[in-house]
Image (cartoon, rainbow, N blue to C red):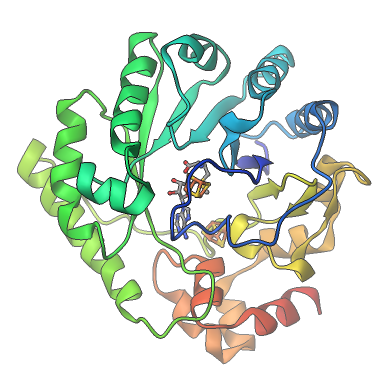
Length: 314
Ligand SMILES: C[S@@+](CC[C@H](N)C(=O)[O-])C[C@H]1O[C@@H](n2cnc3c(N)ncnc32)[C@H](O)[C@@H]1O
Ligand code: SF4
Ligand code: SF4
């Protein structure tokens, strides 16, 4: 079994939208972006690790003119690895849908609400474009998934959005909570996650009579160490929420990602990281021991970057 679960390739920092909450646009501009050849070399290299899936993301990946070429090159490697495209959907057309579906096994399209909510969060006119995108992908036999970023703004309207999606044949729906990138005093962010769980349990019981069981977590961390992220300039991080300069483990222009993933000190430490050990060493991480905590967002919300870096690279 591969150690690597998911490889996230940020193909561009550019975007045609300007969502207020976007974690990626708050980064300083990235220069020296990887060429097509360099991207393909990374994909070939990472395929040696046989991850479960590779996610092409950004910025808006469809702004990269060679996106289809990258998707095709990845398929041509010929190893069974699921390729996923994460997009805002606004640039999907009847014409490009066929090729997108040919080269990407899964197309993840972001949507945050019905028209007024979605357009307030993601930009005027985006809801209609996104619904068209789902339709185009469905028409050519693709596997679209709705990706909803849940915040206090759309939480009260989540059930109606999910019902709307199900009624439109969009049955694969993924929810992820909004992550703040800097220290916040807004404790409601944490409270809302509990509220989200309650709403989901209610939704599935009311619509399909399904009783969600709360999963017992066997893991001793959030999964950190099983992922790897490459930014458009080739810099490598454990994940997007741990993309602190001091946790940059190298650049694909200088090192082989596969070697680094398997042998770097930081990745080995993260793979073995037990949150109980972290909480014992640094008292301020005690709260991480509650279920389903994300190390990156916990660290950012509480302004614990220095303490974490200290623990990880000491
Ligand atoms: C960064 S975007 C890149 C791909 C594409 N532009 C899109 O919007 O799908 C990937 C996903 O991250 C979500 N996202 C952006 N900022 C976020 C944040 N601060 N917390 C949680 N999810 C966020 C977006 O809503 C989107 O679903
Ligand atoms: S479309 Fe995606 S990358 Fe662009 S601003 Fe919105 S969330 Fe960020
Ligand atoms: S820190 Fe958060 S984003 Fe990073 S691997 Fe853990 S859950 Fe995922």
